[in-house]
Amino acid sequence: MTSCHNAVSLHEARKVAIFGGTHGNEMSGVTLVNLWTNNGAEIQRTGLTTKPFITNPRAVEKCTRYIDTDLNRAFTSENLSAPRSEDLPYEVRRAQEINQMFGPKGSPEAYDVIFDLHNTTSNMGCTLILESSKDHFILQMVNYIKRAIAPASCSLLLYEHPILQYATSRSIAKHPIGLEVGPQPQGVLRSNIFESMRVIVKHGLDFIELFNGGMEFPPCTVDVYRVSESMDYPRDTNGNIIAMIHPDLQDCDWEPLNPGDPMFQTFDGRTIFYEGSTVYPTFINEAAYYEKQQAFVMTKRETLVANGVKASKI
Amino acid sequence: MTSCHNAVSLHEARKVAIFGGTHGNEMSGVTLVNLWTNNGAEIQRTGLTTKPFITNPRAVEKCTRYIDTDLNRAFTSENLSAPRSEDLPYEVRRAQEINQMFGPKGSPEAYDVIFDLHNTTSNMGCTLILESSKDHFILQMVNYIKRAIAPASCSLLLYEHPILQYATSRSIAKHPIGLEVGPQPQGVLRSNIFESMRVIVKHGLDFIELFNGGMEFPPCTVDVYRVSESMDYPRDTNGNIIAMIHPDLQDCDWEPLNPGDPMFQTFDGRTIFYEGSTVYPTFINEAAYYEKQQAFVMTKRETLVANGVKASKI
Image (cartoon, rainbow over all chains, first blue to last red; front, top):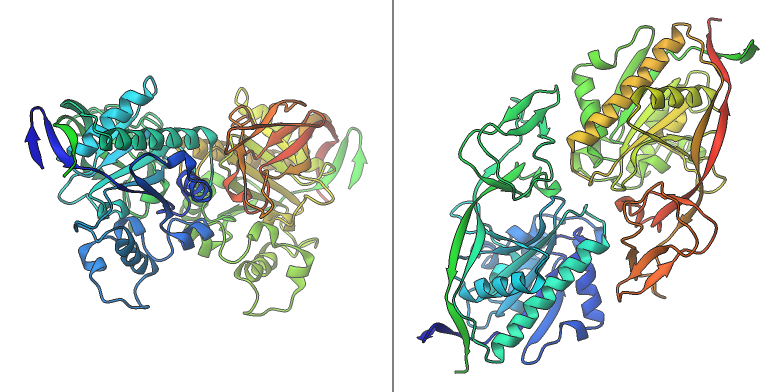
């Protein structure tokens, strides 16, 4: 990486993958990847190879999130370096295979970009998930996508946190990017969600093509929501959930939650109010997060500065 | 059953059950039944015994629809009379147990009323599912509930069909009644859906209490949607789905679908239009029905006449 005028030179992004079915019941990604596997014309771009790939085929077949363990938490260095064994959970073995094909994670051979396609039951709209505030290539890509889809909008979620960050499937790429589109129930395909996801991937690939083709992207700022904390459901002494997301908070992803705002409603009708500084909740009432003791994720707004970037030909 | 003035005398309804978790990932019923199992005050009524019951505990534990086979299709006479065996699918064994406890189906010992609590990912609002146009007790109950919850509304779905009707858990009762409330994703508990279901059960129990207490319910008419046909997704020659519910039809449960209206949108952007006489679709894009080859259920509107009813003390 070398600086040149306003733009940092970055390697071209020649190897691109699109992952679907990292969670087997998130149907937009599963359907799009299957579609593009049969006919890749829509995702072909000059100067790059784009590989659509179903990451958890057994979970897709059963239309379930996972078989043994969450694949999207399985790409830890411990798992990836574990001796191969049939005794390992299915998703750990699968993570090792995927790491062989698209990584190895952290190596020069790793894929340049992986788009990982997800759905959520939360009312998050179109969300792009970033794993690093320092990945200027991705910051420029999401800035490009936001402009390209306007007046439609797209939120940017920065999952860069010492504890809450997790070892995603896409994390084996040099530039990982998650797409999270909702609300959509698990096991359901809704045309509006499907089309939104399709359009975002299109613009993401366009950006890479332009970048590889020599276009220089000037410095810019990017407004993100940075994950700060996780909020569990209220529970009794046996660990059983005793309250639901309050109707005033339900479906209000990305809206400010201020001190004193209703947060939960207990089954006996009592309201539990939020205490703390203003946050922007997201992943509110996501089906898959009940088992993770997570009623919603709290974020804080932040503006990142992206360096200008251009492709280095060397 | 004897006729007296305007009202038919029917046996009192003393034994009532409320089933939750017939599908283990439909959270409103699971949560309400667990709540009432811990504290039944809310469902106690004079002159009746009300038993809240989780029908598929293993599916509830795994938060999945079922373990081996759909419990809500398992109450066939063939299954219920099969010799007991550990080799039978879990839900068939469970159906036999439930039939012992709350039936036997078709016998004088069977429970009088079973409320079976369900959620759907479809935008069906509150729906009461009837299994017979001749069950005047249930017709009067749903008429009572509709009036009690006004101005909120509640649709009545009549599942009385030579082929499409299926052997439900509740079918072992003398008077079976299904509650189907949506939209709610599988594995999610939404406060609005939870409260709607709770209110309907309350009014249903109130009706039984009044009936047992001697109140006479005069003849009335009841507008229902009668199931007429099932519509599958368009598929290719390999059986793969090639289209989604059209955005103009999505979430439009109970609204008329007229000849020439958009019905599906193929993945390559083509619209498939409805042909046939006007119907009222429901269960549009229900997650659990993909495996049943059912994109939606078509219904026709019909007005039923309910006899007046009163409790017979003999």
